[in-house]
Amino acid sequence: MKHKLAVIGYGGMGSWHCQNVATKIPEIQVKGIWDIRPEARDKARDDGLYVYSSLEELLEDDEVDLVTVAVPNNFHKELSIACLRAGKNVVCEKPVTMNAGELEEIIAVSRETGRLFSVHQNRRWDKDYRIVRKILEEGKLGSPYFIESRVQGSRGAMYGWRGYKVNGGGMVLDWGVHLLDQIMDMIPSPVVSVDAHLQRVFSGEVDDNIKLFVRFENGVSAVLEMSTNCFVNLPRWHVSCTKGTAVVQDWSCAGKTVQLREDAGEMAWDDDIVYTEAGPTRTMAPRPAYTTKEEALPEVTTDWSDYYKNIVDVIDNGAELIVQPEQCLRVMKVIDLIFESDRQSHGLACRI
Image (cartoon, rainbow, N blue to C red; front, top):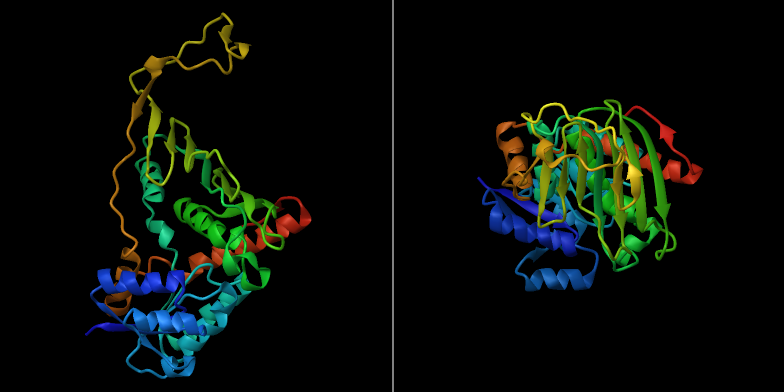
C-alpha cells in the first residue's frame, strides 16, 4: 500500500518536494497541497495536484499519513504539532524551528503521539560533503584538525521572506543550519565553543555575510563561512589533517588530496636558509616533492531522494531514522549560542 503525502506550502521547496517524491519515490503518492496564497494554489492546480480548501481539511484526511511542512520558518512549530496531533507523520523543512525550545516542544508531541518526526536536512546527501566524509572515514590523511567549509555567492541581500527577522530569515538559519548539520554529523565529538561574526551588509535586519567558528572536544576546529557578496570564491572545502590536505573546489567536486608518502622516510632539514619570493625562511619553505603524493578525490554515489526512501523504510520496517530530531536539536542549541555570541561580540564555551 502506498503512503499518501500532503505538502503544506507550495513555494520553491514545496513544489520541489512534490516533484521529487512523485518522480523518484514510488512508495509515496502525492495527494495534494495546502497554501494560504491564492497564486500558489492556482499553480498547484495547473500542475495537476489536488488543493485542499483549508488546513483543517488536510488534517482530517485519513488517507494522508505523511505531511511535509515547507513554509517560512516561523510557522514550522505550530504546523508540525498540528499534523502530529492529527495522526500524521511529519517531515519539516529546515531550519526546523526558530530556536531549540520550539523543537523540544515538537519532539515531546512526537513522542506523545508515537508519530515520526524528521527534518529535511537534505544536504547530508550533497556529493561534496560525502566526499569529505569518506576521506575522513578512510583515514589516509590522518586525523583532521582544521576544517573550512564555505558557500559563497555574489547577489547581495537575502531573497524574499528570508530577508525578514520575523520569518526566521538570515544566513544562519538559511545556509548556516546546513553547514552546521554537516560538520556536526561528520565529527563525532561534542561542541565545546562557538564564536560568530554575523554581518548585515545589505539585508538590514538579518545576517547576510557570516563566519562561524566551532571547536569540538576532540580538538577539531571548523570555520564555516557563508557570503552573498563574494566575487572571488575560496574552496568549498579545505581540510587539514595530520598526514595531508584535501581540497574540494566547488559543487562540481573538482579537487584533490595531497598526502605524505609512506615510503619517503624522514624529511631532512637543511642548515641553510631557504629563499622564497617572500624572502628568507625555514619554516615556510616548500616541502620536497618526493615526500608527498597527489591523488584524485574519492568517488561517491549519492542522491537526495535517499532521504525519503529512509522515511518510508522507517515507517514500514522500523529502520533507523537517518536525520533524527535529537541531532537537529544539537544543531539548534549551537545556533542559539551563535546568535548569543554575536550579541555579546565574543565566543562562548559550551558542551553540546
